[in-house]
Length: 438
Ligand code: MEV
Image (tube, rainbow, N blue to C red; front, side, top):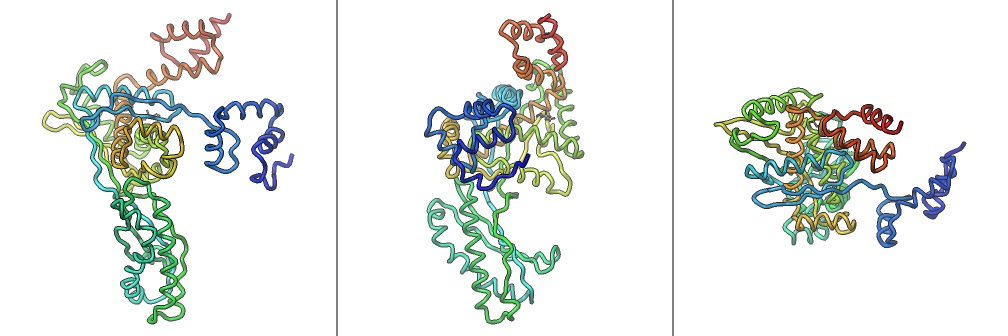
């Protein structure tokens, strides 16, 4: 069958759904019904979602959960988390409770600088380009005045613009490398708009620069775009307590626990295969908050993983130590988040999440997301170095298996009772259900 289609985006939503259903499904009416089943009954909300992207045919649900009891810098938060993985919210809540009894989390925003670049090709004398840039710089600021005015009122704007010679990497390759402060907005549109004006000004001014030869005047802009690598937009999250205070169920010997925990972190510091999974656990927490608060989790992921490789080898984002009988566990990660603009004022559940967090500033949200990541990492390492991860994970996953096999209420109760004291595995649950159904 020919599955190509012309003018798809121009079709009505109904026609798009019918086309997909007829094209790919043996029972098209079922596919149509399923897609429509996930439409929101409130037409206003549905229209909003339809217009977020092109070719919307339905909504794709993932759960929005909350993790209460997060004591951060002396204040309690209930953290909204959008995530599908069974054990993540439970683990976050557990870690939150554990640390709230031990002084809570401390979080500090270290800096908030964002980066944007105009990548261009200049064929000529470098010293002339440097001279040209010296007088171009103020014009770059002037030419973006109408874009930066509002941002400046909020205390942000363009912090600096430098010329970077990258010809050691690619022939004739240079950059305008600019730093921005975007306050409570993530700032992507603001930065990209500034960069496109920089690019235009760069080209125009080069044509008028008398010391340039004809070839030198012809600066070729390749692209203008923000960078999601933000090594100067860093938040630190940490916990610490006397080693003896770590004692709890499954932590009978706190000294031993702390030592093993630190070994687990050290392994992630030196071994990339482990580091990736270790950091994935951190991102379970960070992404869930980023998504629930309407931020761009792809940008955050890309930036954080690049940061994890900043010393030339992919490594753990978190670190731990014992000093003077004290256990401390911390991480510093780049997080360019926004609490105004973008989806934050559009998506009803994002608005609700931000309200639940008591309308945080971008800096406060950086702290909350980083803490969620550290909590997640603590919970994972605690399980891994004590009971193993599968025990808790599979107990949470049990519901998914029961749903997969459409277990009735009685079967569910009996299965849950049985697996309270038995190891959950997919096959063990299937065997148990099959036995029940005999
Ligand atoms: C699972 O989503 C995350 C973990 O694998 C993280 C880790 O291994 O540290 C449990």
